[in-house]
Amino acid sequence: MNALEAEGLVKRFGNVEALRGVSLEARKGELLVLAGPNGAGKTTTVRIFTTNLRPDAGEARVLGYDVVREYREVRRRIAYIPQGFEPFWEHTPEEYVTAVLMMRGWSFWEARAQAKRWLDALGLSDARRPIRVLSGGQVRRAVVAAVLATEAEVLFLDEPTEGLDVEVRREVWRALRERLRDGSSILMTTHDMGEAEVVADRVALINSGVVLCQESPRALVEKVPYRYRAVVKKGSPLPADAVDLGDRAIVYFRSRSELGEFVSSLSDPGLLVSAGSVGLEDAYLFLLRGGGR
Image 1: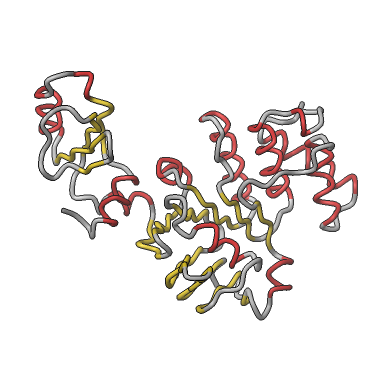
Image 2: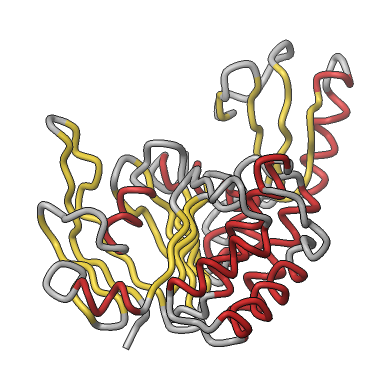
């Protein structure tokens, strides 16, 4: 039995079709990342799985329980961070996490010990000031700690690292891995392909309400027919098959020598933004373009 299953999910908001037949699955014990740009359908999918929104068509199950017909069973087994969620402002992080656990049936002493464990894992063990005076990154970590501390069988985290700097993100990623080792399954959303590539066991790439592909990050990157890329500013001649990103473009190469020759040919070295191996962002671009050019 999978942790999560969705088959043909459709959701409309007026004339807007937010989901157009989403199908995906998450295995028990894995971290599945639902990745795509803003407006792709990530939050709508999560809201259906967490029983906060009914699909217009299709089915979704959590640990085998239907999210519509058996929503009470689903709610007993999950924990959820909505996008942009804000906690109780007058509590300290420890008080907040402890309160969340006590509302779920934990005793005070058990809840307090669990709160300390996960706040420490996220670098907040000494944050004893009210949440209202903490930085945005500290507040976000307190919210993540509360969800991880629940020990729910399936966790849903909608853009949990949005707005966090790189080091804080890494703390969150390490804490997610610790929670997986303790037995939970996780569905996380992000619009950052670099983050998805680092943290996910598998990635479901979504765009315009459709899941394009679901595989491991490595398997998705291997679908790209090139091995190297250069991101350049507009201002010099580019190959006809360069990918236009507005004020920048991506040029792809099959070998390191081709990349080197291109960089050497630039009329102005300042036009080069970055160069290196292809990644998940490139896999996403090629899938959007129908698998290649």
